[in-house]
Amino acid sequence: MNKPKLKIAVFASGYGSNFEAIAKACQSGEIKAQVVLMVCDKPTARVNSLADELGVERMTFSAKDYASKAEYEAEIVERCKALGVELICLAGYMRLVGETLMEAYEGRMINIHPSLLPSFAGKDAVERAMEWGVKVYGATIHYVDSTLDGGKIIAQQAIPYEGDSIDELMAVIHPLEHQLYIDTIKKLTKQTK
Ligand code: GAR
Image (tube, rainbow, N blue to C red):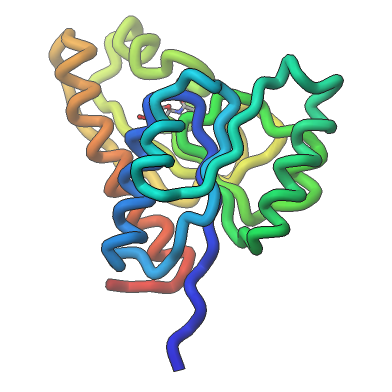
């Protein structure tokens, strides 16, 4: 009998290219999982229309409509639990995770970051790395804890680059992130192919 597919929620705040890569890899059968929910804290972000196009249920919210982080996270947890979410993938979700989400999904929540952590945690990581004259860039996937881009590292991939064009570098880092996320989800689901 076929194993039931792992149920994933992807959290994003912006463009959504990582969400798109994960959702499409699930839909094509490359990853034996299903993205059952996309959570976004920015109503105008492109990722929302992308979720609609891909037929992925979404929860879009504005933090300012809630009295506290605990309140909106309680709603997120409720929605995730109702859909049977087993793994949360943060993909450009630009918010610190609070206690409510941590208590519900600690050890089952992962994040991608466009640097070789623990270097350059936080916003604009690639730009800041370039200002430092970094010669090896990359991406990291790690378990989420309550600190900014903190938590035990699961996977990393490095890419040498000595130019000075952010656009050129981003054009390399994004596809690298997408593949790293897909490969990592496969590993976590013990799927080798
Ligand atoms: C990605 O590069 C991701 O690594 C980064 O946001 C981007 C989202 O792109 N995340 C962080 O910086 C987390 N601190 P996307 O919306 O196209 O997937």
